[in-house]
Image (tube, rainbow, N blue to C red):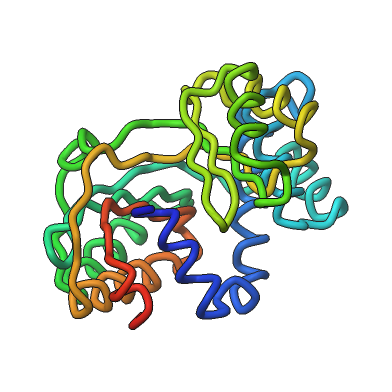
Length: 246
């Protein structure tokens, strides 16, 4: 397990998920607002909004918060968020993709560039590292959703491309354009997912030692703490020994 999956595991062990709950809710609500503003405010008529709402619900965002985010998209004079992607290299030559939603491009670009520089990285041009990733849909289920064979069969029938099962649960991948259909089919067979979202899946990884991993974690944490940053993906891999030390 590498990259975003291992990072999520590290976050869980450090207890950061609870500490950053309100920040997570805010970022999920922003995604809902932008999705509703770009399309129809009815999730049934807007696939991107439907996925955003599904992801928010899987993270236990209250219904009233979700509805307020949708209503905000229709309010006159609301904030105009722009989506932008930054790419660069972190400590140890790890490729990093930063996805942002911002109402001030200059502020966000300056912050991201400064953060990379302060933590031993370098911000590159768009496209400088994304070729090392594939855009995929990712659906996660807990281990008790079924055994490996059961989940695999459900995933195949739903049109998924790959399944990774472990003691921590099941991670199902599909083409980015199929995410909505695959997640709905899986939900009918396995119940509600833990998470349903679009990701950048590393096609190649860079292994880090303890020092490199610690430096990269600080870079990712600092980026994720910024309100303009929606998500950060990196193509790192670390051994079980380094994972335990972290």
